[in-house]
Image 1 (tube, rainbow, N blue to C red):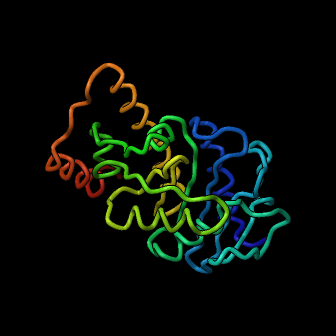
Image 2: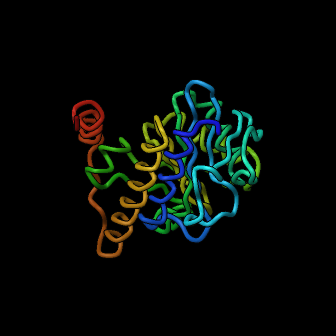
Length: 216
């Protein structure tokens, strides 16, 4: 079985999506790219999260062609692979329809940077990309275009949901979790008043500390 360790990692990370209330039924997916072979492990299409196993993960090449697997790959595979081809520093991609983040997406608004945690993780607002249909590379094209001038590892797609990226699949999942958490905080704050903006100079300091000093 190809990429056994990466299959195990990507399979285990899929469990974090329903655990963190980021998906419903079979929506959403995680992929990871192997730095040595450039092959990608991704969720099979239409399989419920409780039935995912390392064995039924699908391995595709960087152009989305199936290399190993008994199932069809996720309908978002072409877009995941487009992101990998055009963002060489990215080795993990996640897609969700998480509720609060998707609510911002369907009204065409980025998620404003109104928490220190968001300054830490995203270095500013979570940007909004345009509308694109599912099934081809179009969504990947929007993600790449939206993130190319942003420090954010995640973006919204209009009328759709969230795409997040990372240096590996785990960091991409973390970015998806943090996107939804901060979207929920921003939305709730808007129900009781006007969120207080954080100065960009302070956001820059938060981002620098978190990215370069925080943690082990």
